[in-house]
Image 1 (cartoon, one colour):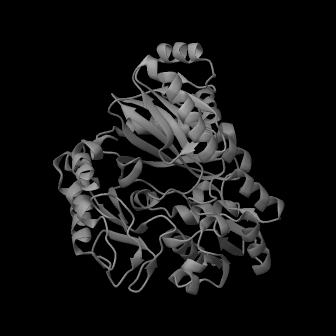
Image 2 (cartoon, rainbow, N blue to C red):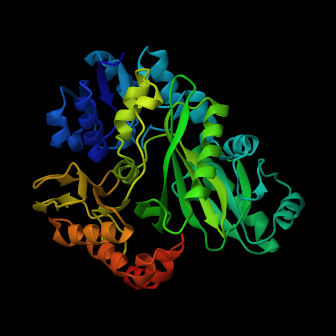
Length: 451
């Protein structure tokens, strides 16, 4: 049984995990870098340990320091949150080897799904629909590359097997470009991910980004708990997310969810995870699986009446799924509020001099920010997630828009004006967006500001 959880993360997700632990009667250990010593979750935790200097490489990514902190504080489990080491199979294994429980999937499942080539092969074997392409490591030979791309059909997209976050991928529209593009992407992948392996897929022109949330327990049971649409993206980073995806039939999602459940059982998955798909012309195509809690998990929680972080902790303690899952109802939309220039997307670190969080019926705010909080320049610029929930999509949208208009943040620049523009934009209001929506509707203005 878990008694004390070390939260190996920072910001709003650290506070989110801390609260879930408290509700389950678990003690908490917060870690913090020198840049985060003033954060509220540090004061709220039962114990707190400075893990190192501001830079993430010497603090939040220092595996030895994290395990040492767990041992020193008597923590018998580590929750990695999202980002940082949450999908690092080596870290998960080191935690287990230290006799500490890792709140997440087994290392081998993380390893399999973290390698996009192995993940795609596993999904094909499980009967999960995938993007057409070449699901093996790309060869060096120019002639072979040209033959593969010709067989898949241009345009194609070259991807890094160890990539993520929009890095390590390039679109190729012409055979004359394939060899140079592969060479460039391979070197980028080597430097960024320590893995030069690449694969290739058909480039879909106007797809949506659809996710399936899954849970799997220690007794071999798995289930899916709804779907999300995350198509509004800026430079491959999500801006708005909602559940359920507008305009997609419940039957189609249920059939896809069932296949994801089978895949979980085939690979021996454990805990929470997310299958990500491109969706175009009524066809779903798997792209990757995230073996952790997602930033956008609140929209699933609001529509399914479930605490996904608590579910992770309860699964780790051996509970069966039938005591955890809920039922889907209503609609939720989440906006990521970032400390950034709304025109260029550049981070805007500094001190929050004034802060007013919104409220009201059907409004949820996940944040660690308060007046006086410093937003450091070393980490992600996310400062809050604001969620609107309602019986219908229109009701959720109205509530979210009112909430964002009510919100007040001073001392740093934020993307609040941009979020309000998106919510007022007719294609979004009608649910008619794909992954190119942002660049199509706002990209020209963004480029002008960047100049």
